[in-house]
Length: 174
Image 1 (cartoon, helix red, strand yellow):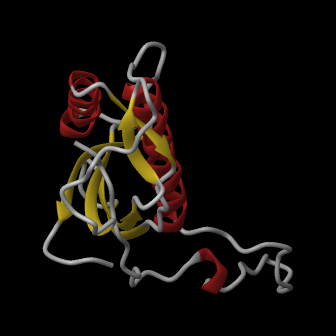
Image 2 (spheres, rainbow, N blue to C red):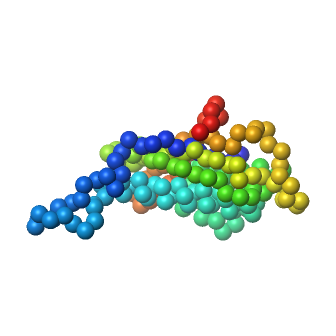
Image 3 (cartoon, rainbow, N blue to C red):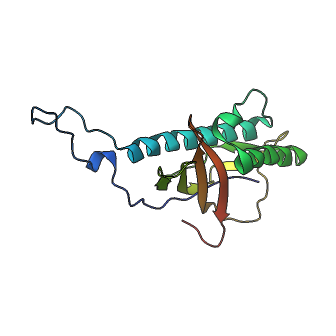
């Protein structure tokens, strides 16, 4: 079970498009001030990147020993990593390469606890392929389509953001 994702553009303005803050003197400050939503988005994307790095390492080595999965993933997302490692091991496979990610935080709820977010990503697994762990020969895949839209949810526990679930849309590509 390989986790992957495809992105849609968010409707929220980026920090780059936010007007600079103006100090009491009336002159613009040296750098713009991030809104709470923009600061949260940056932390969510950092968590998401860590979530993928953990998967890459786990799938390429065939084990989770020493990997801080729970630093980035909880619930279904953490269980998915574990079950994917188990599946690849049962098939004598490891995964080589790196997926191409293009995540967008498409919604953020900072109003009602627990805070939550949605990440949409177009994950391209063209160069992230399962291979025989002994011979290195690529595994024959059921599909030649390597780009799919994934939607992930993230939650905040008053300390940090975690990826807690993900789903793939196999009915199309991105």
